[in-house]
Each structure stands twice: as structure tokens, then as C-alpha cells.
Length: 110
Length: 114
Image (cartoon, rainbow over all chains, first blue to last red; front, top):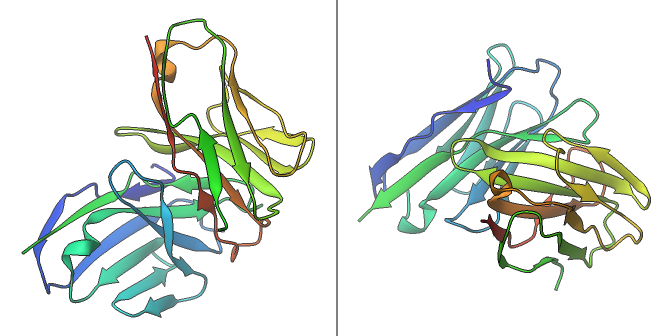
């Protein structure tokens, strides 16, 4: 099993739709998790951090399921500008290394 | 403006010709790291540094060197580049190891080794 695994997509959704991605991780001791957004050929930028059961920021909700070892990202009312690749990131126990998932590509259509 | 800068942004070189990619941050961050991003493989960590004169290997360190003589700079050195090092490289920094510290990435360096 890969350390951090994501469905690569692409997820093609219409504007206004709600879309959710999952990310599974193998290290059961992981305490914190991150979702980064990466636009084509640009640097990743932090979208959300997840420490306990979840986090919400506007249209974005991240949830953590420790028992099943996955985190999810829910985007409500999708905008064209949400089109990007979403990277799931899991630090190791010491926090000195980050493992990135392969990313899930989202395309929001008019 | 708080940022991580990398130079050059684009580089085409030939096998065996030593090169250095510079990375600098102006946020007084302790932690810096280098990643490479390849299609189908995602971002993989090459080296990281937790402070001045402290560097450690990441997941894919072979063929690379780094140094951290000053807090703000963390250059990536390819002593003898090979075609399999053709990739998109990102430098990153964050304040410390705590999970709440956001990691900031540079704009990337696209390297082609012929």
C-alpha cells in the first residue's frame, strides 16, 4: 500500500456542484494532515490543515477518519477557479518529512 | 513580501555539466527542503535542513547535494546531472516542524538534462 494514495481523477463537475475527494494514508500514528492546491505548473499552496476530526473554511470542508485512515476534502458550490490539482500531504511522526499523494485533478466546467 | 525564490526558473543543460539551483527565503524559517515532481510520481523529497549546517536526506537524495551555510539560503547542487534528473524542482520552507506550520513553496525550476 502506498503511504499516501489519491484517486488521480480527473473529476469533471459543473459549476455549483458539490464534489468530494478522499485520501488514504498508511501511517496510523499520523497526527496532522494537509490539503494543498496546485495549479498547472505552479507551486503547491496550502488550502487546509486537519488535526482533529475536521476543519471547515467557507466552501471547503476537510474531514478525518482515523479508524479507516482517510481524510476527505469536500468542495461545495464549485467555482471555475476551483479547477486545480488537490494534493493530500501527511507528515511523518517527527514532522521532518512530508509525504505527498499523487494529487486529484478537478475540472469545473461552466 | 514573504516569499521563497528560486533561480533559475528554467534550465536546459547537458549530461555531466555541474549546476546549482539557488533557493532563498525571507521569512527567517528554520526548516527548508527540496522536492522534485514527476508525472505519475508526485512530489518527492530530495533533502531537507532543520537549521544552519544541519541537512538530511529525503526519499530520493541520489545524485544531489545541498548546503545550508546561512539560514535564508539552501542551494541544490547537481554535480554530474543525468537525463533522469529532468524534472520540476521545488524549494520550500516553514518555521519549524510543528504540524501547524504552513510550508511555503518557491515557484519551481524546470530542469531538462539532455
